[in-house]
Amino acid sequence: MSDRKLIEKFLLEPATGRGVPVLRGQVIRIEQIGKGHPLDFNAYNLHDYKEYFHAGRTRMMHGLNPTQGDHLWSSPPRDRRMFTILEDTVGTNDIIFPRCTAFRYEYQFGFSGYPPHSNCADIFAETVREWELTPDDVHDSFNGFTNSGVNPDGTFYFGQAYAREGDYIDLLAHFDTLAVPVSCGGDLSTTNNYEIKGLKIQILEGNEEDRAQVATEEFDHQRTVDQFKVKTIKADRPLKRDPSFVPEWPWQEAVKKKIEVEVELDDRQARLLEELKRAPEFADFTEAEIVRYCFFRWWTEKFMRGVYHLQS
Image (cartoon, rainbow, N blue to C red; front, side, top):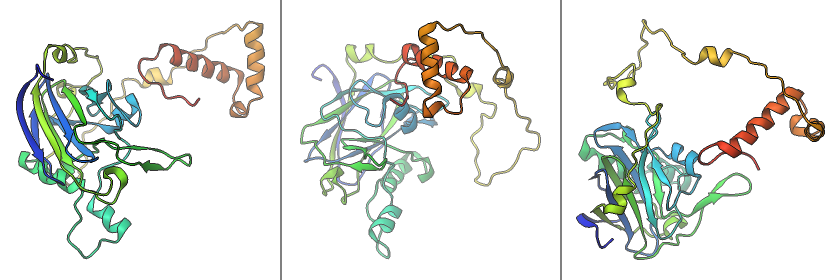
């Protein structure tokens, strides 16, 4: 970090947030000042707020708990690397849980008839108001320093916060962003060891090594606004049907087209096919459907780029 020029630094007081530009090649460092406190993090394209951090795409690409070396991806159909996690001294981050809300505290804890409990949704909404955004523009967050996982019964859990003073996460921006770090407003969970604390934020000019990692790879099907058929952002809230609308499905013919390929199996493959025909999961499959399934399962494991999502 010593060769990174400091641009700005500030402390987030407990249960507050701040929107700050982090430009292409710059690094935002979020650091602990207490014994374990979660970061809630939203981010937008500084020049087009409709492109924003997308927990769902990031979850698909890196799993439920992204850490050092993983990326924070922008919303479909843009699908761009937004940030890279350069360093992560704790390694417990979460993109399972949505931001907490005042409703959650009323519903789960009975906090009705009182002023709203501090919560990340309202903190985000008040923070982005400075940038003329609304509560509707707040999105699911990257929850840094948050220990989470999945129980055997499929439910999610929060675990004890392991972060300590001085632990940090460094995020490298791949394009100009508005970063919105928030000090989580929840105090009734192990995520922050039942105490609301603050966070230290630094914006740094990336060094040569950082700049070398800024994404330059582009893909044909990362959509841009100039490709949108409707380019103007809707300004009113009621939904109205366009009577002139005619749908276009350029992929439909390819989807409907059926191609038959003759496949010759050797003796070993034929024996395996007979075994699979007796397996419960293939009970209603034809031989052709089993062969097709096995071929694409093999192809996916061998050639697919990135994380593939298959049952073991």
